[in-house]
Each structure stands twice: as C-alpha cells, then as structure tokens.
Length: 206
Image 1 (cartoon, helix red, strand yellow):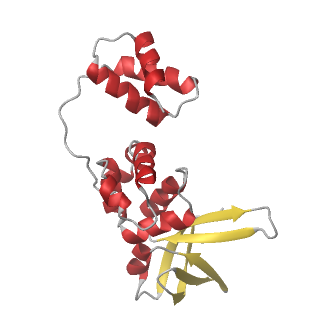
Image 2 (cartoon, helix red, strand yellow; image 1 turned 90 degrees about the horizontal axis):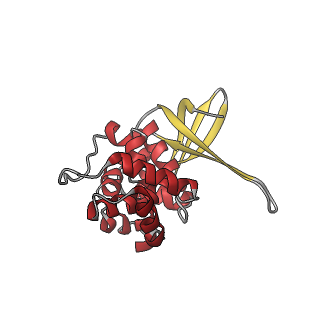
C-alpha cells in the first residue's frame, strides 16, 4: 500500500500531477484544491489513495493524490457514501475546500453541497446523514477547525440513547441513521423507556 509519493513534479494540470520518484513517473488524479497547493513547486509530497477495479475486459489501477492527509481522509469518507463515486468526490473537493465541505456537512447545509455540479438534493442529504458524525469522530473537523452551529444544550439521556442505538445497530441499521432517529425521539419524549424508544425508532427509520 502506498502512503505517499515524494519527488519532482514533472507535469501538472488542474486534474493530474505526474511525480517522478526513483526514476518512475507516477500519474495521480488530483482535485483543484491540491492543484492550487502544489502549483509552482518543484518537489512535492502527495498522499495517495489507490483504487483497484477488477472485472470486465481490463483491470483498472488508479492513483489519487492529495496535498494533505485531511483531504485524503475526506475523499475516502465521501466515496463511502452510496451514490458518490470517485469523480463526484473529486468534483466536490474541486468545488469546495476541505474546510468549506466539512463545515457544510457538520452544519447540515444542503444548499452548499447541492451547489456542486452533479449533486442532487437526495445525495446531499445522504452525505450529511452518513458523514456528519464521522467527520467529528475521525478528527478531521478538529484538524480543520470546523465547528457545527451552536445549539441549545441537549437534555437527551445519553445512556438510554446509546442503548437504543446499540439495539438498532444489532438489528442491522446504520449507527448514524439510528442515532439521528433515536435522538429526535428522546428530544420529544425525554422519559421514554428503552424498549418503547426502539419500537418507535423502528417505525420512523428509513
């Protein structure tokens, strides 16, 4: 597995960087964000994401390069979302900086995400639901100094919430989606018992 490639920047376009290291020229697909970071440099270090696709007439091995680990991690989170492929993720990182994108996800700003070419409302909503908690737990939000819009202090019983989310997860539901539904119910009915909470969540979750 390749962690990063460091060497001479032999060629550069807004979509591709060729880095020569050890006599080998590595072609890496890049975002406009990375392009602006490495433009004008003679030597670069690009963090690598390897994509291997097998099957069909030919196998495909593609390298993606990123100016820093945060952008690479955000890219990997994006492509983990159903309906978001490599090109869409790269388009998002070309249209928005990692900090702008993280801010939009953390604050549930569908408008900003939907403003990226090729992203519809449903995909924008899915990105927010799937990644809102992950960008916090992964540490990207802290590293990019991203903060969600301040909200009123929560009165949710975290013990009850965690038990209910755990039950939902065991039933096969995604933790992030389960947590969202469970938390909403607890805010409406703070004293609800765990078993009733799970029953209600099963009715609401999609």
